[in-house]
Image (cartoon, rainbow, N blue to C red; front, side):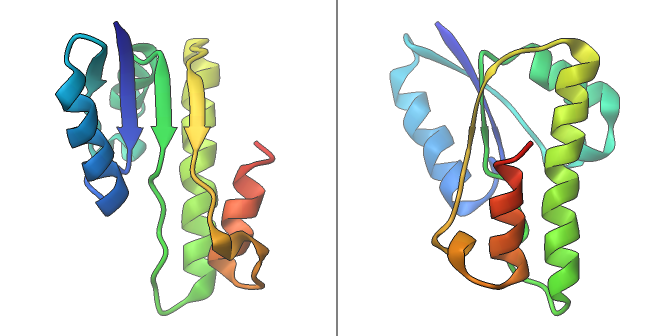
Length: 117
């Protein structure tokens, strides 16, 4: 059985992925994730240690200040990477990109930079 966690589980794509994986209970164990895990190292460490696969979907894509979008998305990746490093966890990581990656906006720039971590 593959243990899968989804950051951004409460979002549109994350929720649909979570529910779809639930249809295959004999193949996948869903590891629950909540947004506040990014602000609690103990919870995030426990999450990453329990996952064989992490689908990183958590991101901000709307805000009045484009710089807040960029900084938030970069921080989410940095916090996740720090947890993986701290715990020595090596799950398979799948992260979402976006068609925005090629555009000159802060959301696209943050998605493009995520690929370099």
